[in-house]
Length: 244
Image (cartoon, rainbow, N blue to C red):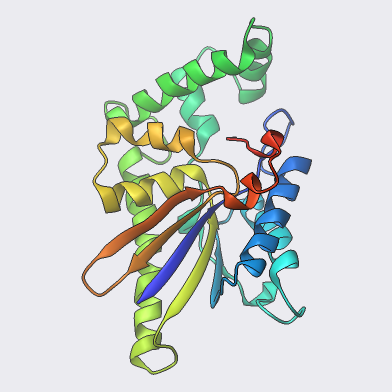
């Protein structure tokens, strides 16, 4: 039996030149998650991170609070698996908004709108629909390829854990996977059978640093819970909840 915790990264720096780094709020979200995991008696046998910088930073801040000793779950022992990388949201949006030469110029345009966040969400929704339609071949990674990549990464964890169990190294393994909302949504989709056209409704609901738990057996993968925000809600501070 394998327990896999899919952890969405803390809030990234959406308004900065480099999105792929945690904001100050994102760092706090990750630290609060680590403290909650420790105080609630959770365990981790393996740490897996996607290849985005925000994945590693979330793991670093989380585990600083969780570890009892510096040697426990040390960074040099983490498994880096690019299969858990997020899709390239900038490319997906720019393929839809081809009149803009780069993502920075698109953001400048959107920031001039009366409601910038709503304007971006509208553009993003339309861009995602174009991507998942399968009608266009101008992406470096298609929607189908993204799905296959994410699911192959999850299968690698399951295979590794089963091999260890068979060699008597462990009868049960718990993995923490630090990744992104698109990746998590795609993995949940494969468990629950959510249609492609609805998957990004789920994606939009995932909070930063939220936790989803899968249990993987020999013949079935089950969803135990989805998008758990308990580590933030206990502080009764609405500003801790974010979605980007």
